[in-house]
Image (spheres, rainbow, N blue to C red):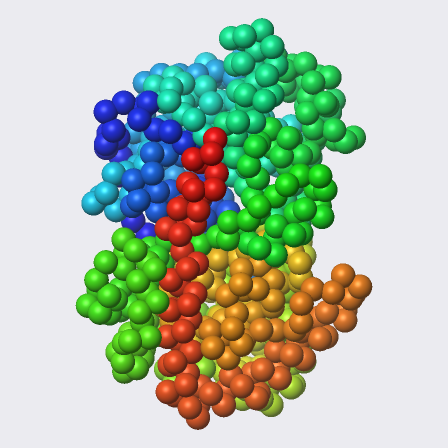
Length: 571
């Protein structure tokens, strides 16, 4: 991932920016831990593509001085968390203006920081980081922006006021007066729309919702209820008392509680889910709202490993600027593809040795599973029938796991322990490792170095998923449940393999687990293992098709172009 730049913006004045992108987390760089997982990584990839394509955008997020957390794992697989502090004083530019927001009647002052994203060859994108660690604030208020997704509703709503209200005010103070589109990335940013509404009232003496809706675009990312923040109206009224009348807030949102996703839906003229299947799920969750879809992608140059970058640079010049050129990978000979993959696999094997003390074999089929550890992602599904797995995979499989559980997610933590238990039970028959402290740098090694990418979410709870897209850029096919992006990317036996059938709302959790595990074992035994070991030319063909059909489309260059065409130009 490209290093952050801390120099001046390349545009002469802030007003050259036309789009503002609000996100609670943005993965700026591995050394700046302002992200927890897929949402933040997606936001960072989007802004990098905007920089490459010259889209006049500015990002807005919180500083998160204490980061997310560093993960340590005991020998039993018990997760321990350590803070991951970083210093904006050394990695960002301090901006001279200050802005203030009112939270529960208190004036809270915000320090502003700027980091630039981009590869240095194209115009860079400024990201504004909002920081309440200002000496004029109370000790408690100075910590509001310290921890990503801070604990408790009062702390969370305070963060979201800083992001939305403070973000709009920061843009004004920094001279970004020409913003025409306010892109709300998840409901965390919905209060930006309330600040725009307050501005309309201050200028024209009326709460002009139509004018605000013309300027707001909203992307919803999750079908999981916990991903949609909700607050008691009593807390919201007290926290937002200076911003908007309580009755108007209820009118804008509805319901018995303030649902931030509902608020963002009602404040935006364009709304999208992040995959075709996710659009359908979102429409059922929020009936009455027209919801489109723009399927997620990944930043191609960032997520392609060194050996494949070199191959593409030689054979497909211009692919970094136009990832659609990756469709021509079918014209590259098989041997260079395999050599590039072997180099990436060697790096992964070295990482496994250094981090876990295990010796993986270069000629054994290696499965990768790396993502946030939470119940619906079903990290332990592969081990549902350990003895069957042992029979079909003995000496022919090795598995790499990685991923953090949210500190308060006890089920997610227990899943990590279950993987450790399965690893002990399988021993050397099927070597299994769990690599601690998963971040973007480790992710690049894992997604490129495995032979097969595994994804087992419980349908329909995977909004999109992007890890399999990263794997595809490195010629790694997926075996995945038909949910999220894989509904669009799977061509059976061509780009990878599907697990289970389409979503059946009548099917219970136990039945879904049983069916999906059975299908996974069947695909491994009858299709995947025989192809990998007995038909190398066909396996490489599947690798080429994963690149040609999936990497060429599921990238943020295409995604950003769709946002520009479908959302930004019509604001």
